[in-house]
Length: 228
Ligand SMILES: *Cc1c(COP(=O)(O)O)cnc(C)c1O
Image 1 (cartoon, rainbow, N blue to C red):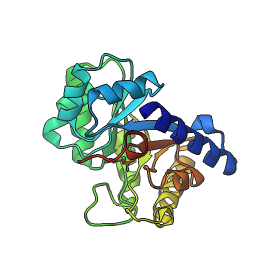
Image 2 (image 1 turned 90 degrees about the vertical axis):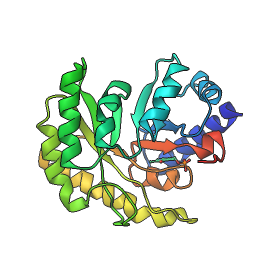
Image 3 (image 1 turned 60 degrees about the horizontal axis):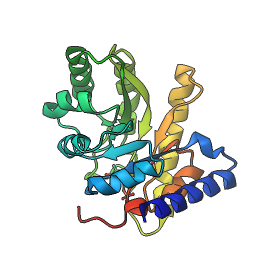
Image 4 (image 1 turned 45 degrees about the vertical axis):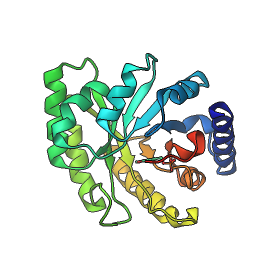
């Protein structure tokens, strides 16, 4: 089941990439496993999933105990400062960095815990401006990016956003485009060739591919509807 859904998702990603004139290999799939039991995550890994996204630190810690697999773990949910120490030990990527406080705390914690490699982080931007969403304001991104670049223990890789939820995936397009344009401005200023753009979920990932996503965070389309 997981294997078949995963295959369909991969085909859709590849088709959307080709239709947009993009190379499918430059788009990474992060399988989002919140609320998914370990056995089904294992099925996904057996079917080739190499990157896992979890929303909560504690849930990831529990699953890692039952999964001895060489996968990369991405924290995609809001991170509270008091969980930063555990998060830097348990995740390879933190996609939800959105405040100066958190930048400083993560850098400090990485230093203390003696990670051998810098922690990769994305800046989460609230492009749509919905009050219910985490993420920094687009106007604050440049300053936070500068702070991230000054951290010895963090490696800033790009931007992440969550689009407003709508039945029509087109509703998400302006958020995706806004994130890409912000990324383009930052790249130009920094002289970077490329920057990660983590955007697009089960119901809108094709739109995200059209707008330049380099990472898709997909749960439901792989594992089915969940209770949480
Ligand atoms: C749950 C979640 C996803 C995946 O959502 P699906 O609709 O199940 O694909 C992606 N990103 C974030 C931040 C999430 O919380």
